[in-house]
Image 1 (cartoon, one colour):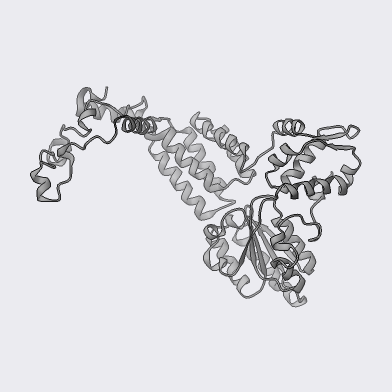
Image 2 (cartoon, rainbow, N blue to C red):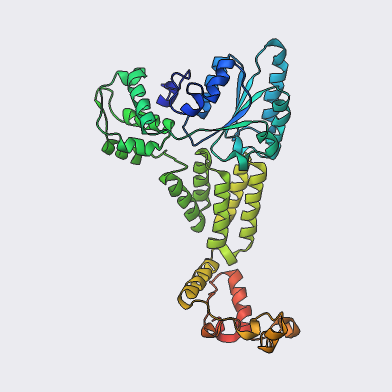
Length: 424
């Protein structure tokens, strides 16, 4: 089976590498490292598809050193220790220090990152990490202090044009086709500075047409093909928001199958687990709310667990939380109440706090009647006494409206017992 275009065109040397001149151009820091053969541990920070993994491979090939790679999504502490042990055992038979490349290193939790410290510090391996997230927040300080951080930039239009020209002139498959590039606006816009995405779009267009037909690239063709591609997923683009929307709406609609499916799409697409977990916390409050207050506890526990354990086990935590939320009774009464209250505040402005609710820390305030007629609820039977808590202009308003579910029906019964007709 023919490899994808992005793989067929993966640069083998810095001369084929496009972009990042500030790092690999003449006299730049990584170019100097390669020229001297003296390379230290570093982290490549940049958006997807700008050449982080490719650059690490080129460095290992040029230095003729063993190259080990781990994915933070699929690897745990055991896999890290196994690789480090192999590096130690093979060290006596070679002069060059092996490179350990960790893709998406920001997904490693603290214990996984801790397992790297000794090997990096004593020179067992040269660590090259790749991350799309700010290392200052995602990489532990002891490891970060042992690594330089180099920032990679999205490819600009000139780089993307250079990549397009290379694809059409170098790739053996595309060279067999008669190609007509009429427009590149949509192609470059959808690529968004991502080399891999650009090549995937070209691959998609080429595979969607007969090899005997001319390969036409223009805005209409690019837009049409991308809209027809069901596997497209872009963490920074429209599909990102479409899938998280489908995920949340599946939970809101009490469909655990839909929730887990869209969760799987995000996991497979490399979505940030903390982003997913944050959305679960929001859903627990907005869509389930007082119908099952435990949902917020479960969602918050899931958020903390994902932060502590990371991938790949974090997917199980997210699945459990998503299914629990989908199966929970639903209520948006808290969501509606705060929106109603905010709308009231916007319409009525800064209404004065009733005197009996005001704090009276000074004698002057007491003389002015601050707190004078306040009734301390615990001094009364049932820890309740009727008194006004809203501003005078709103004293007859009802903001929170209980919804018909078991939990809120109980709240409603209690409030009716206490307040009478206020909560009908």
